[in-house]
Image 1 (cartoon, rainbow, N blue to C red):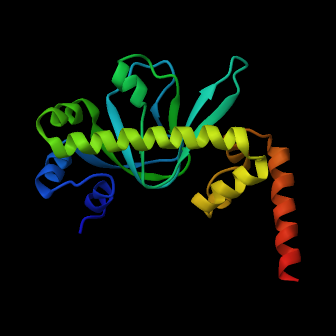
Image 2 (cartoon, one colour; image 1 turned 45 degrees about the horizontal axis):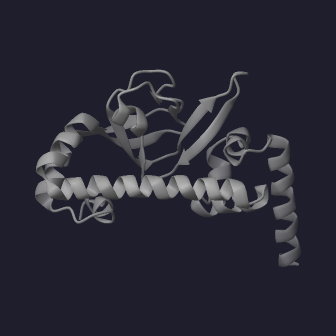
Length: 198
């Protein structure tokens, strides 16, 4: 079974006919590290991506020019400025690859057209939006209820090799702490791990 077909079926019941329709409005892309997919302030390109491999991020620039990572995407995630695409207004976030990535690029406008005529694709879209909302709520709860160590452990559980994939300052930005604080958290966890082994 096609891995992408199986992944989409984890959201909603997609038959081969519907999958073939989606395939016609999609293309496989290899994206180099630091490729910007959508830029803050830009009019939406009406493209969304299904991340197959690699790591991407969504970030916002503060008034001082500092970047704050709002989201780190791992396979298999849907990536793109959905809000900008839906509202047809400039994106409030920048979406960028942090590593070399493989992704399926989907024509969002064509996807919405398919939703009008194919109930299975429409149901898939609804499930994807539900998942986006659930992830958004989960992220907000983590920031409000977990300390830095707990958030870091949760991130490592989701992406076990995150420390080898992207720089420390990118992880720290996502955790809403400084690189120095992240270094302390890592040392503390490594020390505890050593004690448990001895």
